[in-house]
Image (cartoon, rainbow, N blue to C red):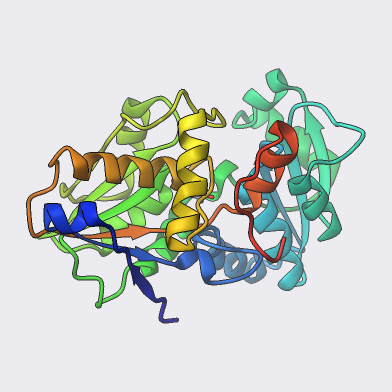
Length: 298
Ligand SMILES: *Cc1c(COP(=O)(O)O)cnc(C)c1O
C-alpha cells in the first residue's frame, strides 16, 4: 500500500534549509492506525497458520497495542484476550471500552503479578485459565512484528534522516532494517531506560546507522507537560496533523527543537514516521480535562 508523505511548511525550516516530511501511516486504517497494523500483520497470519483460535496479549489500560489487537483479531475471526495491568475500574476508559466492544476478553492483573508475565509460571497459569492461545508480547514486538515494520519504508523514502517514536523499539528496528546505509534512523524514546532499548534494538538489527535521542522523554511514558499539550494543539492548528501525547507529539517537538538548534546539517531532508496512537488522546482528554486532537473514527 502506498502511503503519502506530507511536507511541512514553516519559516523555521526555510531559514535552516531543512525539508521535513511526515509519512502518514496513522491514516492507514481507521482503527488499527499506524505502526500497530504492521506489527500485527504477520503475527495474525502465523496464529492462523498454527490454527490457534485465540490471541492473548498484554498491555496497560491506555495501550494502543491492546486497542489495535482487539480490532485486528476480530477482523480476522480470532478471539482475543487482553491481560491488563492494574485493577479493574467500574467505568471503562475509552481504550478498554473499545477493546471490549470489539470482543476482547479483558483480564486484570495487579501490578506485581503483571511484572512476572514473562515467567514460565505465569504462562502455565494462563494456559490453565484460558487453554490454547497464540501469544503476542506486550507492545506487540517479536521477530514477526519486525518483519512487518520493515514495510513502513519503501523505495520512495530516500530522505537523509528517518525519525520515529520508540516504545519497545520494534518499529524502529524494522525501519533500520529497511533503510540504506547513507540514511540515519533517529529514534525518540517515550520511556526511560535507553540502555535496555539500545540493547534490544541491536538484537533485532545488524546495522549501525541509527541512534536514540533521549532528551524528549518528558518524564516518562504517560507524563504530560503543559508545553507538550500546547505544542500538540498548536501543531494540529497549523498543519492539520494530529499527534498523540505519548509518542509522536514528543518526537515532533524534539525534531523541531533540534532543527532550531542546528542539529541537522543544512540541506537535510527528514522523514518523520507518524506511527498513529490517536486513540490514546481520548483517554488523556477524559482523565486530565484536555482538548488534544482525536481520531475522527474513535
Ligand atoms: C506503540 C507505538 C509506538 C512504539 O512502537 P514500538 O515498536 O513499541 O517501539 C510508537 N508510536 C505509536 C503511536 C505507538 O502506538
